[in-house]
Length: 162
Image 1 (tube, rainbow, N blue to C red):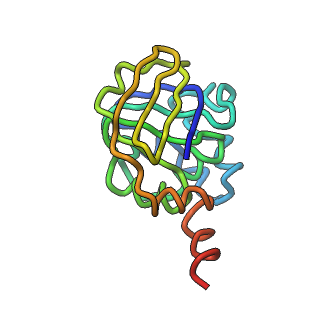
Image 2 (image 1 turned 180 degrees about the vertical axis):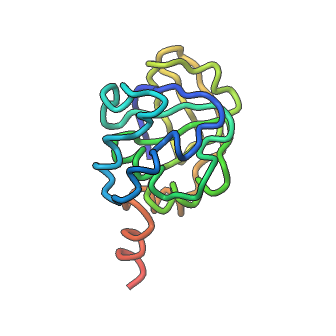
Image 3 (image 1 turned 90 degrees about the vertical axis):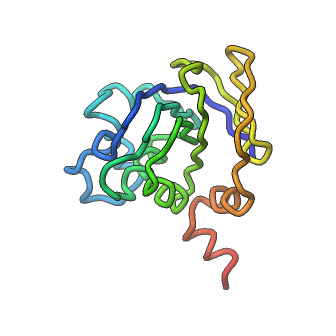
C-alpha cells in the first residue's frame, strides 16, 4: 500500500485535546470532527489540508485521554497517515480501529512543513520526494494494512468474519 501526500508538521506531545477539543465529542461523524481538527493549536489547519496529506510530528503523539474521536477527526479532515517519533500507546489501537496508519520515524526533524512524502507501508520506506531522502522504517504489518485498506476494523470484520 502506497500513501503519497504533503506534510503538515507538528511538534512533540500532541495530545488528544489538541487534536479534537472536548466540546466536539458529542459527535462521532468523522467529517464533522474533521472540521475542527487541531483548531485549538492551529486554527488554519483544516483549511490547509488536501485529501491524502500526511502529518509528521515529534514524540508522544496522541497522548492524553483515550478518545477514539482523535484519530477519527484526523482521518475526517483528509489526513491519510501520521508519522511521528513516537506515539502514546492508546493512540495505536484507536488509530487502527478507524483505519488510520501510523508510522514511527526517529528523524522527523529532517522533514519540513510542505515536503511531499511517499510511504510504502508494506516495504517500510518513507521517501521524502522534496529532499530526495529515503528512510527505512519497520514495515506496517500485513494484517494492519488489511484493516486500513477496508477503512477500519469494523469494515474488516464485516468483510472477512462472516
